[in-house]
Amino acid sequence: MDLALRRLKHVVGWALAGRARSSDEQMLELPAPYAGNRHRVCRLIGLAGARAPRFGPRLAPQEHRYH
Image (cartoon, rainbow, N blue to C red; front, side, top):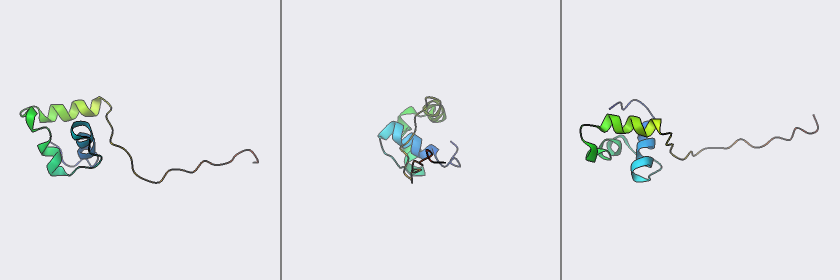
């Protein structure tokens, strides 16, 4: 499996364990029941559109009425 993708570990952790943040080690152990198909499982999770929750600053709404 490709460990270079930064967000893949979080997506797999969210889809299989409900954890918002996961490590590389957890990403490799969570699909263990699907031995032999781990790459396929991770690919299907990504194609299904599963996304981990985002943590970060939100863009504040701007007032455009008086411009």
